[in-house]
Amino acid sequence: MFLLADTAFACACNTYGPVTVAAGAEITFVSPAHAGDVLVAEAAERTRYGRSGVYDITVRRPDGQVVAEFRGRSREFR
Image (cartoon, rainbow, N blue to C red; front, side, top):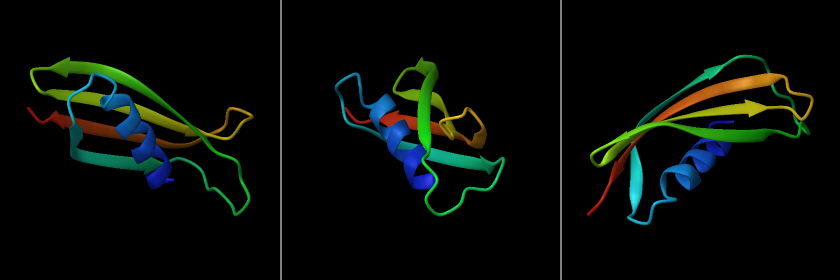
């Protein structure tokens, strides 16, 4: 789940052009996932300031059940 959320985070924070990397991240596991589960990650930019940003990613099953919440902090290279 962390890999899926981290990939969604990377895609979201790199949409502006300059290479952007994770400055930190944490995940909260809300409910269990099982082998064979289909999971979907949705990223939302919360704020960008200077060369930094904060993004929230929710990992869900297709029925909408939340499996994990991820928050990532980004840092842009110039």
